[in-house]
Length: 477
Image: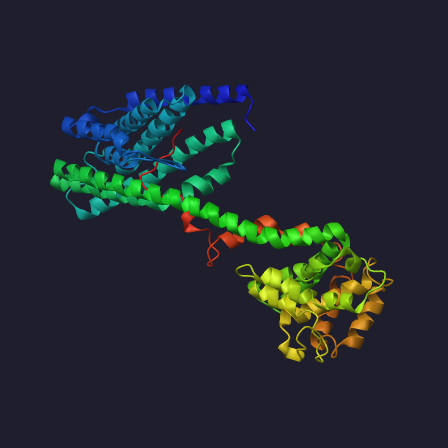
């Protein structure tokens, strides 16, 4: 939501006052020797203006040569020339790009004030920049570190002034802007700062040719940046496609379950409760996160095969032998539906065998004991317990105490005895109905699962979505 106009007018007034104060301070604190030699001043201003040609638009801002030029000016001339170079660079860019007056104001502020303040701090820490680093290596290294610290200050001030403008005008949070625009590019910007510092130190030994060498570097930089921008656009398209596919993969089984829930609302409630109980058991057993996820999701979808049932079977008054065959087939149908999606294999296995018995009398494969997957054994316990205590199931609901007694009665024949005791201990500690309030949509966490599936296996955000790092400074447009 946009801020009220009066708030934006206050922002403009504050920005204008800050810019005017900075200009006055720059004029007052300027020293004549900051503008000598004139050939160096002319070259840096020319590079600042030429930076418009080196500017490349990206999805997250503008990549330009401004940072390098302002660093050179801070290290070789002083704070006022650094501010002039920054203003020259962003002024030409704003004019060419046709920025609005408020964007002009913020751009001039973010570049001019940031460069001037950073330059003042460098001067205060290192003295007169024209004589701060003499022939001694130690002096040069100390000055280089001071100048690099000035680069960090410049970057932070530039970002802060830019971010405040977006916070007021667009309502975006500082933390989000910091994470999206500043942090991803910081390493690249610092690398540029280090190169500029090296050029400053080289200038004292080699002279003007050291800076002229920066021109082909900038040309190469632009070509690489253009290629990087193209790669970024392709990567963004690929990332969008990946998210679409991930969304589709999760949407289909979820839609089946929700469709089943429309025909019988007890099914989604039952799935959510089983998922909640099953994940608690997996955590209690010390399963890793991937195993917990398989158990939890299989619990949520374990009865998805019932989607194929007719209403006559789903809400029976009397079941025929053929109906019982359909009922006994639902683990296979569910596993087949879920197993078609990439990465759902373990979940499909857990669904397929959740009606197996420890004594081999279950279906569909008649597995015995440890042949039954752990996730299936967990789901069998949770489903059996929830079915017994839920009010909407086939017979009258049992009390939790009677249901626990029944679990112990069938432990070792139908259910895994050791897992039954683990589950009962959880019920005694957390309450006998702690999973009953689970909500299907909450347990599904659709958006979170889509994001996770779209990320690489390392679990870190995909590098394809990261903003490219290069000679970047923040400005409007």
